[in-house]
Length: 95
Image (cartoon, rainbow, N blue to C red):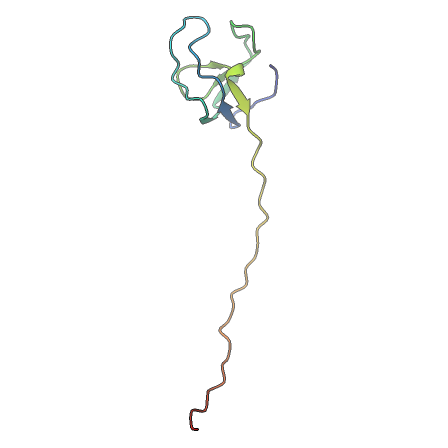
């Protein structure tokens, strides 16, 4: 797995299985979104990725546990005009 991730990118956890090496449970939650704090260009001992990712939980995790989410698109700013109240004609109630 090799895709470019940078600090601040959003990633989705897709694999919260136990640690590759020790078999201990991990504090990650599958389906949760995390923001990347740092990327280290080191091979993971599992051999599945070429980077370790710090998401602020624990130390650093194998890149294969995450999928990069698309960057949010900028919304076009809409200018709204303040509507003035309409002039109403008085109703003649004499009948």
